[in-house]
Length: 454
Image 1: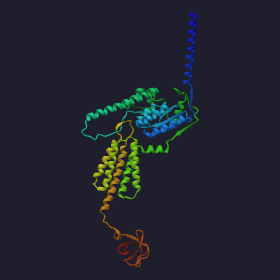
Image 2: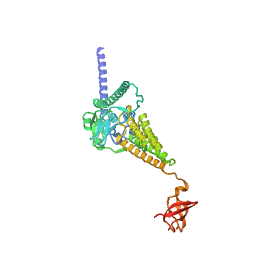
Image 3: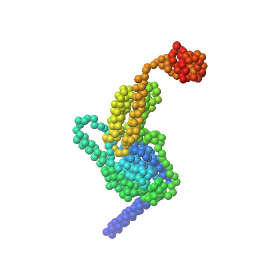
C-alpha cells in the first residue's frame, strides 16, 4: 500500500516538473522571438510641449497602432512645456501596443524638462551625438499676483514653499515610476528633477539613461537590428520596406505657430496697432478688423499656454495707455506707463503656479516689439498734434492756394481739374497753355481765378 502511495506521489511530482519545464521553455522562446520591422512611422516635433503637441504625438501613436506599422520613431527637440500635455503624451506612449522610440534629434537639439519625462517613457531612447538631456526641475507657470501689500510675507513664503515641495515630490515620484517601469537609471532621473542635472548623449548612454547614440535615422534603425526588447523580442530591422513621415496637419501647424509665446505677444501688439489706427481714422475698417482678430487670437494663445491672468491684463492695460497717449497727449507720460505695464505683464505671464518649464517671452523680442509700438504711437501722436494745429478750412476756402493742371488752353478762360472735378477757370496772367501748372488765387461762384506757377 505504501509503495503505491510513493509511486503515485512520484508520478505526480514528475508530471508537474515536466509541465513546469515546458512552460518555462515556452516563455523563453517567446522572449527571444524575432520582431520584424518592415514599416516605420516617423513623427517629428520641435518646440514647447503644449496641447497641440499632445494632439499631434497622440495621433501619431494612434496611427502606429491602427495601421500596418511595426515601429514609431519620435524625433524630438524641446525645451519643456506644460505638465498636462506632457502627461497626455506619456499615457499614449505607455498604452501603445507597438514600440515607440524617442530620438533626440538633430545635432544641437535637447530634451529638457518635459522632454526628459517623454524620453524616459519610451520603449527605446536614443540621442544624436551633439545633443543633451536633463534639467527637469518643475518651475512655476501661469499663476497669480499678490495685490495686497499688507499681506503676511512669511505666510506667503511658507505657502509657496509647501506648494513647490508638493510639485517637486510629485515630479520625483512620476519620473521614478517611469524609469523603474522602463529599467532606466532612476538615480540620474531623480537628480534631473531635483538638481536640474543635464548630461550629453555619450554620458546618457554610459549611465543607462538611453539605449543608443545615432548620427541619423538610418544609423538608428541599423543599430536596432539585433536589439532585444522585453515583450517584443529581438528586433530585425535589416529589411525595412518603407519609412513614412507623419506631418502635422495645417490646423496643428497654425496652432503651434500662434501658441508660441513670442508670436502670441506679437499678435497682441498687432491687435493694439490696428485699433490705434482705427481710432485715429474711424471708418477704415480693415485695421480695426485685423486688430480685433489679432487680439482675440493672442488672448486664445495665452489661455492655451495657461498664462498668468494678471500678466495678460497688465499687457492690455499697457495698450490702453498707448491709445490714450494718442487721444489725450500726455507728452510721453502715458507712453512710459504703457511700456512699464507691458514689460511687467510680460515678465509675469508665465510665473506663479506649478508646471513644467520651457515657456516664456524672449526679452529681446519683447524689447524690439515695444520699440516698434512706441515709434508708431509717437508718429500717430505727431500726426494728431499737427492736425489739431492746422487752420480749419472747409468748402471753397480750402481750394485757395491749390496747384492744379489746365485741361484746356486759358485765353483767358478755359477749364481746369480740381480734386477730380472740372471747373471753369480764368487766367489772371494772360494766355496759359493746356497742361500747365496753375495756382488758384480766388473763387467767383463756380469759376476759379488762377495764375501760372513759375
